[in-house]
Length: 232
Image (cartoon, rainbow, N blue to C red; front, side, top):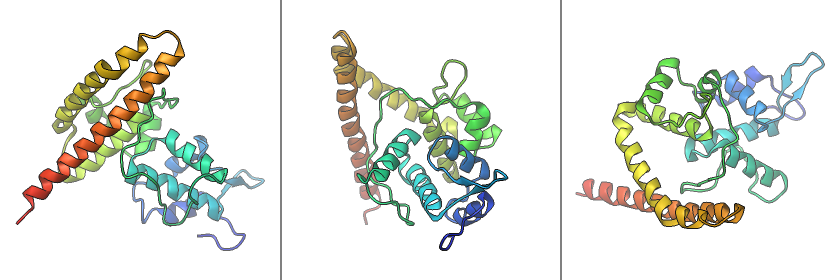
């Protein structure tokens, strides 16, 4: 961590954070800068110089993504709240709020090419191709990936460490699709019959509330089943 008024180069930032985040790359740091999550100073020659605050913000971003699977849009909102004095301080422990899934049902503004997706997730081309072929991602018109695709691909890659391949996870996609259908039937369709943006916004609010409870139920059932399995 830089001392006093000293600053770190992008390579030194990588060396500082990589012990805790082994999949971090220089390309990812540049991606987070392009996304507006960190704004390092520049030397007259154009080299990036990261302050202590920059490094702490990067640690916060990485923790929020890897431990809480938050999309970049939510992380950006949290950082803006922190900057405005309305959120928890960014600390070196990289704490991020929220043990439960957080749903943001507004349209994603993230548009990533295949190359950007590889840089953001740290996947190699074969891994991304396998996840694509499994049908777990929702590539948009034009072949672009969005923030949800980044989160899904990252989780799938982490599950690979336990021997789970993308093809093993198709059942989870099917189960999620059934829940989406249920939410659509119960709260989306009734509200979107209203004209104008009010109906759509009401649909998002109700869908978020219902989806959060479904996710908590899934978590509780999984915990109860595993607790029973591991009981003496």
